[in-house]
Amino acid sequence: MKFSRFSPASMPFGVLCICGGFGFPFGTASTKRIRLIGRCLLSTEIPFHVWHIGPSPFEENKHREGEFEGITFEYISPSVNWPSNKGIRIIYYLWGCIQVFFRLLRDRRKSVVYVYSQGDLINLWTLLLCRLMKIPAVQEVCEWWPGTVDGMYFKKWMYRNIMFRWSNGALPISHAIQDRILKIAGPDYPLCLLPVLVDPAENNSQIQEVLRPHPLASQFLWCGMVDGYKRDVLFLIDAMAELKSSVGQKSHLRIVGPCTEKVRAELLSYAGSKNIVADRIDISGYVSDGELWEYCTQAVALLMPLWNDDRSLTRFPTKLGQYVAAGSPIVTAPVGEIKYFLSEETAIFYLPGDSKGLALVLDRLLTDPALGNRLAACATREVLPKVDYRSNVERIGKWFFEIYSGVRHA
Image 1 (cartoon, helix red, strand yellow):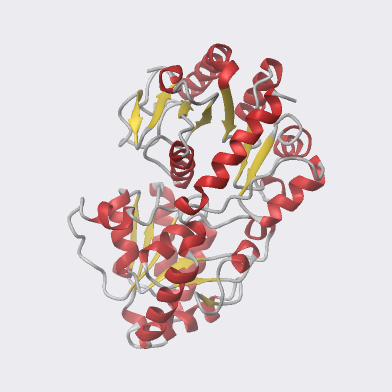
Image 2: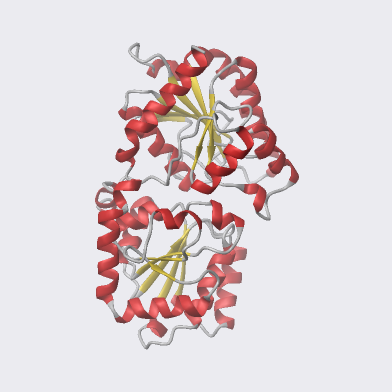
């Protein structure tokens, strides 16, 4: 299945997304972001195709090529299946990088490349190829790694010297990231500020496809990459230990997202050290989209911990869209991008890092259900339209068209 087959004659170009490591069409929040941006472009009749470098860590992805929600995709590696041997995985990635060269050479004349990799070798390789072949490239920026513990020298060099100088535009996810890009690339560098997106219609359709899980009594929900955000989960366990109400002391914390057995054991051990019985902490691991929607709608509160650090200042919590669409109250700290979307009318706040403050908030929601209902209803009315992908279709399509036209006709 070749990208060129899906380029109608009425459109002068198509968009190629080059990504890898998290799976497609099923996977992480990054997978969902790519899918929704793809759907925005398809709504404006701009073809969208995904080249996934490397295998998929999720078993739900079984096909090397295909079509999903109108988006065509292809794994450019020897297999979709994730090898347990690290050396074999490296070979898969190297093979994919070699194949990207030949595919871009073939499709370079009528393409804009949407580069999802950020600050790594695949990012560097893709931008280098686009630069040499004079293919317009736009850079995804949903994280700002230089200010984090993972911001190694190479990542910092990529952000400061390559990503916004070898690309023709970028898609920052937050105002803080947008401001930093402009300081590096200059005020004329094309940007399309794009928040986390959601399709609210998925809520009902996805839930209908799964058996209704047995709900936990008084359930709080957190979801994300558990190993990467272990600090968040440990903090939530601290808050669970501080709950004072009788219903709070019987409540449950459900943790959803990929989690290694080592980290699972560590979290349960930590909960035990806080005198929290094991059955009050449910570590569900990776679940289907339908199950996740169901868990979100069942929750007394949806939790988004943020901190007084650079990562929280620059990031946009990737589950905000789904949380708002699920219609349950959101609990978070007023840090960074949150202030552009949530207020005391649409969410309930605690001070970052204050586990006792968080516990007071959770106890309040448990003992006053009407409060949670008011917050959720207001968020649905005021916040959901901002992150509904359909509200962003026209400006995304126009921006990509301007990128292509500006490069090709400059």
